[in-house]
Image (cartoon, rainbow, N blue to C red; front, side, top):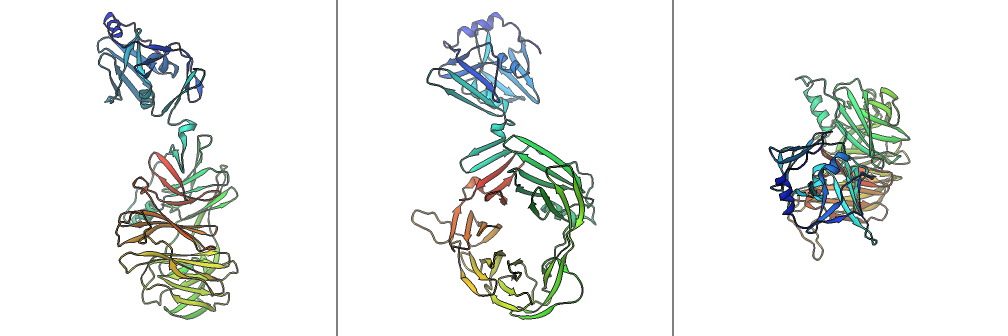
Length: 495
């Protein structure tokens, strides 16, 4: 480590021109919760807290230098180089000039810099606290400290993203372009495991990387598995103790709705429905899955799921459904939702309900909650589309009629209404008896919730800074609105 050279006479003259400085010897400096062994006092100049440049950064293993030629103090620490020009009060970080209301100064033959610039230069935060007895503490936390790794601000948790990507090894070809596009759309899945860790699962080429993020301990453990499949598409993650199952290379089909695709050419029944004749077959999900344990290096490798059940063949409909989903009630009865058409079948393929909920259905999904089905549908074809829901019992009897649960165009007193004619549901998940929806109109994003038991619904318009959320993830206790960018993960509580 190079020492800061003795200042010249001109530097001493500059020091005489500085406002009188009051030593604050009772102030302790902590760096990521460790007390620094500093020799120079903290100074207060014109209400500004100043720290000795050399004293601070030599404690942080920085290489400190002084240039007589350029009248410049500098330090290099990691990838950051800080240059200070105390004669002019200017400062640079990696060559970029910094805007400072109070710049670096020479006081008592030492270069001092303002406290807030310390946070700026270290890429972290600085807090100053003073006790009643007059003692004070300066807490410096860098971006990778426990405090900054996961910060809680009201109903928002911000987690530093320190996970990298596996190096890509296979370039897409003309033959694999479709698989590559599918990979791009499905290359990351997030959830919170039963140890309250945020788990990020990413796929790249034939690799699957699992990042287990313990934000209480500010630690990330990354493991990479060989999926053995080109461009694996992550389609689902299920919690099962410590073991998580990731679906890869799952074949999508607009013809079938249910458990995978038909297991054979035989059919169980031909149903005469409002949408025409529909064939029910025994279905099987033959998608390949990667089974792994997030808490160890072991993996069961790539297998087929082997899940069996019913599948509805939509080939004889006049049009293939744009929005189709299915659910299985606790008694084994199946429900199918196809562009607003609800079909409920008993175990013997008896039609228990066959109703067209909406002829202008947009985004929609069917859920099962115990012995009930809930269908959520965007009702289009009007100036202000809304989200509607209905609840049926597994035996086909109605529990709650098709009704408006979003009420975006119905405003209360003092509530602002922005005109819209488009409505899409960006994400929709069920937790317990509540369905959570992230809805987007022409201008705004909303969180809409619907409780199946009470039939109560809520809406909340997100502010402009919250419009980048991807969707919902499950935690141990609830559902949170989630987003990830290059630098951070964001988990927002849902009211």
